[in-house]
Structures are given as C-alpha cells and as structure tokens.
Amino acid sequence: MKFESQSQKQVFEKVQVWIKELFGEMAGTHSEIPSFGLPLGSAFVQVNVLPWTDDDAVITTRSYVVQGADPTPELMLFLLQQNDSMRFGAFGMDSDKDVFFEHTIVGSTCDKDELKASVLAVGFTADQYDDKIRDRWGGMRAVDLRK
Image 1 (spheres, rainbow, N blue to C red):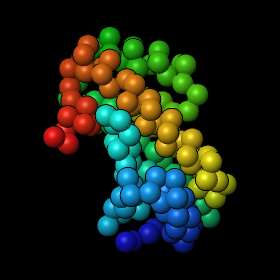
Image 2 (cartoon, rainbow, N blue to C red):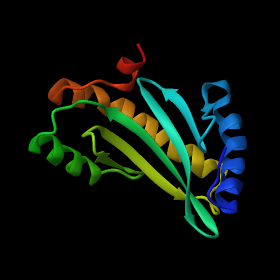
Image 3 (cartoon, one colour):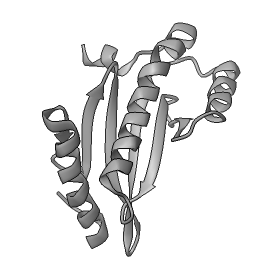
Image 4 (spheres, rainbow, N blue to C red):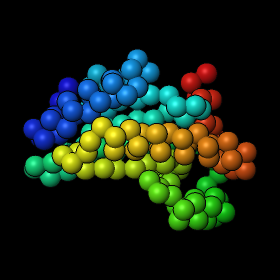
C-alpha cells in the first residue's frame, strides 16, 4: 500500500486497529489504497484515510446512498434541506451524479469513539435515506448493486 505522507500512514495504522476492534470481520481493507469498507443495513460505508497537510491526514467516511437517481432540481433541494438538520456529515453528488453522504474528521486528533460515531452516523443516514431517494427519484441502493 502506498502512502503520500508519513502522517497518512500513521493515521491509517491507528484507524486499522480501531476498525477491526469496532466492526470485526464485517470490515475489509482495500489492498492498494488506505481504505476500509463495511456493510451497514442496505448501505456500504467506505472509510478513507487521505493526506491533508505535511503533518496530518483526514479520515473521510462516505456512503453512496443512491447511484443513478434522476438529478432533478427537486432532489437537489431535498438534499440541501436535509443537510440543514444533519449533526454529522452532509449529502453530496459526485461527477457521475451519484448521491453520497459523507463526514470528515481530523486524523491526528481522532479517537476510537469519534471514528465509531462517524462511521455509524454515515452508515445509518445512508441506510435511512436510500429507500426514500430511490422511491422518489429512482436509482439503486448499495445493497441492490451487491446482488
């Protein structure tokens, strides 16, 4: 696995221990990039350790909520209005117009409880919203794509 900085490697190693302790065999590690993945309900959560500064890295937890939804103005407004009530994270849309929910924390100051809160908040939010979005704007949930 290739790291862009020593701090990214250190944060990854710390997170790797916590992910195994918190989620056990449910969590898998990507072989080439500093990333973990685990299913939560109908969602799939990705935990990525990304370089940030020379002395630190960030932990970005992301779950694709729906892929292939119709990106109407109504969907955009819905996502923005839902962001207003979120405690951890926010909805977004990538360049393929797939809807995701994401939360980022600072790697050097993160502790195990903060990581757990981030992963569970992202996973439970994606699991809660994937049916609502799919039913109204189409697309496929993570669980649909795994079949």
